[in-house]
Amino acid sequence: MGALDGGHLCVELDNGMKLDTIDLGLEKEPETIAIEDAVKVLLQGLGEDVNREGLKKTPFRVAKALREETRGYKQKVKDIVQGALFPEVGLYDGVGHAGGAGGLVIVRDLDLFSYCESCLLPFQVKCHVAYVPSGQRVVGLSKLSRVADIFAKRLQDPQRLADEVCSALHHGIKPAGVAVILQCLHIHFPNLESVFLGSKHQGWVKLLVSSGSGIFANENADVWSDFLGLLKFRGVTVERILTRDSTKQSWCPSYSSSVAKISSEFVAPNPGMVAAVATILRYLGEDPSREELLETPSHFVRWLMNFQNTKLEMKLNGIACCRTDLLKPSGEVCSHNNEQMHSELNLSFWSQCEHHLLPFHGVVHIGYFCPEGFNPIGKSLLQSIVHFYGFKLQVQERLTRQIAETVSPILGGDIMVVVEANHTCMISRGIEKFGSNTATTAVLGRFSTDPAARAMFLQSIPNSTTSGIL
Image (cartoon, rainbow, N blue to C red; front, side, top):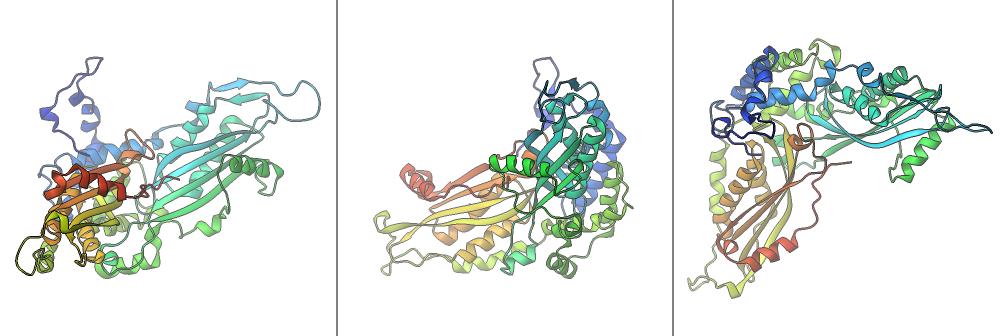
């Protein structure tokens, strides 16, 4: 998450290139500059100081990430497929299908990431591609993944993504047929007010879509049974593939009636911020007037306003009244021998990386000591504190520290906080480390000097359940 200022770091790579010169070309391009200016408008609309440490380079980081992850607009399928078709004979004799004349070819579990065209939030894709060769030729298997990635690196809708990948492969390879199945996972980011009001929240929206051409055009064809059978053999369960009509207006959480109702009541889109998002769309190569994108700027701004820099700190002062009194009736401080360890585990949180303006989410675990027989602090109070610091432009290290410093006077000073999170910026851009998870800790009081206490608390933490990977 953290990054050193380029002016203080000058490392040479093996080829002699300096790290601080790698992005100079991209940084000077007019598209990048225009997106940077738009991001500054968004940050200012959140009440942030664009010159504060941590945000100085955010406009460029966001512009770079968006341009990298929408590079599919400038890529062509024929540049990938041409030269990657190889002769392969079929069966020499007998009845059947194999090789380059009718044998089924499947590439499974392609991990992709795309940006939802309705809200500009990234969504995960597990892609499975099948094709039946014809004309005694096959395509290099890696090209199936590269073609799928071209269309994933655009603002997308799941069904259109499946259709575009299928159509492109059919025209590029000219097989007997192509089939594409996508397992999609969209983060359902809660509204700030909804979590403080205690509403139940489902963190993910899942969708399964398919597309077929040629002999796969008929969804009841026997070849579909072969394809699905091999997916089940791999452990992929395809229970229900939605039809095109059922995916309309139901995929993106921004179209949810409850989300739309809360957003309209609490947040009126800032016209300047809406115009800034439209500018970003334009310089990414999209048409903001396209029907599917008309509401996208407003959806994105409503979501982003969850993280505005407000004066909510004043409302947190009342929590100090709940400060735990760890003194015996006689006024003597309780000894460690009379204390018991307590913990609150899996306190959920959602936040926004201030370096890339991409969401990260996970769980918080809090361990503390209190006297034997003492009633532990209620979970709802600790959950409120976690949400309070989560709904800001954040970095995980700061979030962990802020939670620890806030709960310390409430819980008695002997505190350990563990935050486990999945960062979209780790998997939707750059290194694209699918399945990666980040843990940070903060230890105060007894926990900072007692390894046995730390070990006891860490053993109580369940296996991580924060990952949304399909």
